[in-house]
Length: 342
Image (cartoon, rainbow, N blue to C red; front, top):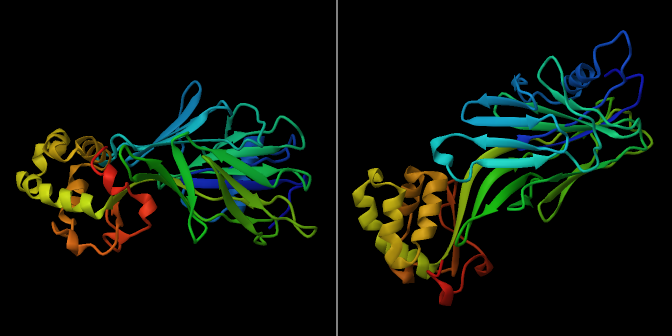
């Protein structure tokens, strides 16, 4: 891989939004700075799909890819938004993330391929670049210009979103549900980083509250620019946590609801479960994932008999994946005394 005349370091974060940022040296006989940055990304980044050219508004670049809509503000202080517009995502299909706090950038410029580039205000700072990809994710990359630049970049999500690092290095973006449980509204793929020679560099994520930080470890042998690009994408899943008494009560009520069919609507379900004091919870979950996925959840309720449950607390993922009801720590559930007090 060729080196740029001016040393640059690049790092990025991706989440079922995918985020990335970059900077490059500008010469009079070369393409614009935005195009140079886009060219750098295409050289060092893994093939994660084509960059989508969005619709350019007065202050935002927006794109629609399938059921996903992205909006990238040209103001570097604005929030990048990824929204799932599918019918099953009503109520919890939106995710916001901001450019790293370490990036003090000018207004975004648009490269020919659709990349939105935010150039640093200072010669030694870090640039950022944002791309919407063909799978609906948003990729944010960061680029520092030499070894004196930042090697850690912090991304801020909404106050109601909690990043959780998985064993494989990926990150789930979770949103608490009314009455318990959590909705996974986004996912960040495992972090990666490479220098200008194509050598992989150690990198990892850490979490503090709603902040996700990617740190890249460099050394004397590191060739700049260094590009680090996790990928963030939106993905709607709901995690339900119920104790065995709550499962038993819901299983008892589920029979009548399933007999009515999916045509009854979410409002009816909230009314039907009112007797069990979980109407608001059921109505909310139904609105989030859609009635078809909720019915799949009701059909998976194991038994009306409390004796069938050996654990005190269970987790269930909507839509289902792998194991159905999974025993988890009782700290995830409400106490028996507080059951049905949603």
